[in-house]
Length: 222
Image 1 (cartoon, one colour):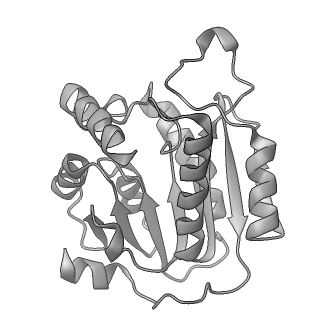
Image 2 (image 1 turned 60 degrees about the vertical axis):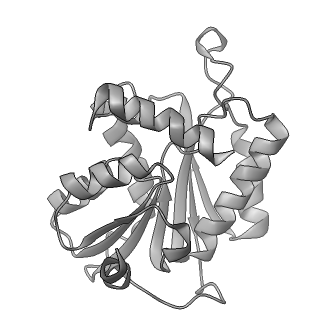
């Protein structure tokens, strides 16, 4: 299931380069609006350094935003599309940022974010795609100490604009999944001007079974 998605985004990157269209968004403005929603998971009252995993990092646009924000952080970007990881490494040279296409290397972090990775379903069935989403959310939860956030296209989008190869999800289904499986503290954001929603999951304790690492550890292996 992952290989066709990697090819899809490789083609987009080849056609449009390091840009919003290169990761299949319509505009830079909408891409930044998505980041704004996802970053609500980060505690703005805490001025200490935090660590973040960008699961599906593309060419590193979120890393560029964090660098520009000037708040202390460490960042790991992961993508199944190797050319995306190569493009990110070339574009983002800040030493606080590391990129990889090896999921086995991913560290435990404070926050895990995923933007747009559930939208392109291609030929996968709805049932198989839901299983893929659920498994990926489990991965985000297992790698997060303080919380994770993700976005998805909404089933409430205008029907004439929907595409057969995309996934339009029921927000309530994934809100319930997150509430029942991972946390009582879940927020559903569906009030911004895009045909999608964002879910924030705040975790109260450190997940078990994972060794704590930071971008320093991954950077040493990259």
